[in-house]
Image (cartoon, rainbow, N blue to C red; front, side):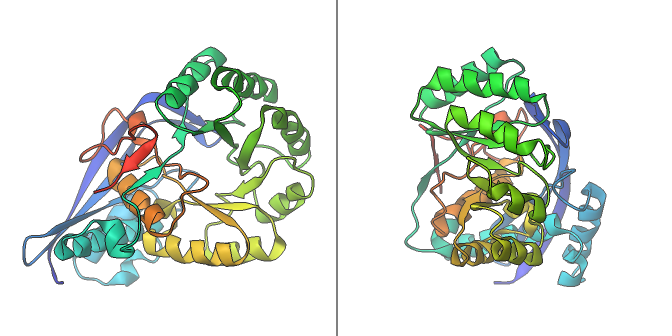
Length: 329
């Protein structure tokens, strides 16, 4: 396979409702689309989607890196931009799968399934609206939901989480994501109170591997590491200290699906479960992550990849769940 043409374009994603995180309010963001074409006319696409608080670079740095790579400056141009590396990695794999005439997940693993269950991220400005969104998601087939916490006072979060649990009943799983919002001093009490709503796990209740390790000893809720793990060294520290029950892998944030596959194998060998999630990017990035999740059998807990429905504008065909599942092609 030889790349005959490479193109880089900027796009703006907008969201149907603002998404509140402890890193700020997300209403829109700029992303980059990398399109590769081989000598036989096959195409492959990848996305670079920098996001404040989750990636070390911004859109300008990612664009410079991609343009330099497209100009055949080599992989050295991608060193400081994990989102650009993710775009290149996805596009090359997508191109190779297209040239082979198979779906990407089959190219990565011929025995992988063509559909996978996904967790829905539910948002709402009030407990009632959040509960309505959660009920709609479970009625639509989702068996796992994710709620953001930490941006509001704990009393508000408790009310919101309890409203969702009342609305959906005892069976669907609820996972939480605090994005490292709580201090090591306040987190144990918050987790104790939230545990009453039967939480599957919580992502980043505190920030940093040492703080996560301390929380692990007292948390009544399983703990997942996310933003605290940005490098292979971080992952090794996480495993060595037993600082989490699970690790969240966002291929778009850590350098692509190849990196995520290696990290998943390392985490599993260290006794940790793996959850593949999106970076709230477009369906281009979500699709690459979904094919990876299928290929490496990262299906339980369900991947956090039902986020295309949050977008008012998307790139390509939206990858939307059907009855709680993504269908891959």
